Image (cartoon, rainbow, N blue to C red; front, side, top):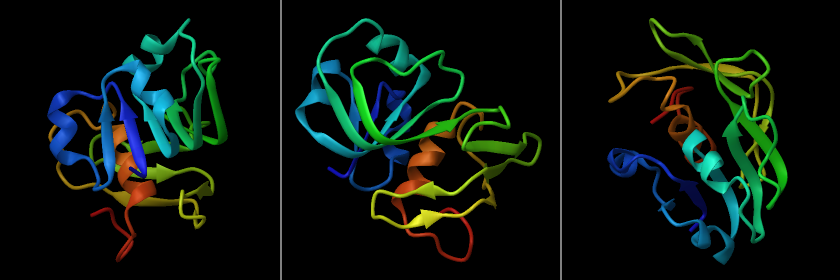
Length: 148
């Protein structure tokens, strides 16, 4: 597996990019060094106070976290949320556009420059789906300047 998401809703499973594992148990996070690991807000809360070392190259986390869970070791961290300081945000909620605020490293070593991606209709509230959109952006080749 090249990527994982911890504690994502079950109904997101069919929308995960190929090669992305849905992690449900905290113990599974320590079994692998993840090139890309995304944490949902619920996943971050579930890790609070836990032990065990979690290692990843790139960590995708909610931007409103007061602090990263102490057991996580990451080479790079990208945040998502509705704040202008988040790496991934939305420039509009009425006609959703995913906004990359600053250059983001991808697990394959390439970089995604700051830019915007108009979004197709989504199966849920766009702001709640930011970790899933971030996984797509960081995992899949970008063609024609849009998300697959």
